[in-house]
Length: 256
Image (cartoon, rainbow, N blue to C red; front, side, top):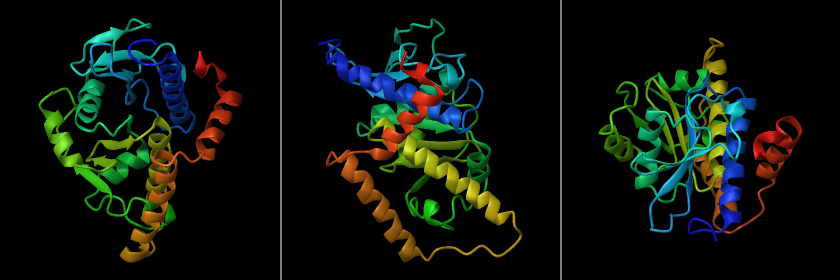
């Protein structure tokens, strides 16, 4: 046992979180040294809440399993192999969610061009295709308050998020919650495709054709059933396994 949990469990969380950073980078969804993906660790020996975050100053394609920073829910650094601490804005958003939503094993935040574009229009994401139908009536919204350095904003983020897994941070970007790192990444990739498709479709100058609400809801439930099978019933996750194989070819040092 290590830090109140098996070293194998902690190793797997570190590996998956490092994989998340690398996949976001491979997909071109990173933003320099900014934005974050965090993962909840098992509680410490004294019951303290802990989670992992990327070292401040590293690009996503430089993150590895061993250089992730361990912090507690007050922002105190517990372990910092790289020695640069973490981004304060990252702590504000991610700690808010982890402290309030114990079902969130992973919190993923991006600033992509498509995601920021969709977050910057009043209508948000429209159900224009199968990808976006996954998120039908399942997106929360939080109004922009400036760079997230004010700890008081945490309560408002949590209140706006409610029990949803997906949030558009108005004029800012996207926020995804996963019951595992794998689920958060898959949601983020699908949301990004949805936003790109919407920007492309509306940019054609033709009439957008939205999926009827009942069909969109049916589609969203189909997606949810598949995700629940993996997260709640322990079914294999071939999509995540495929992502890890991709990394073994293109960025094998993520495990280091």
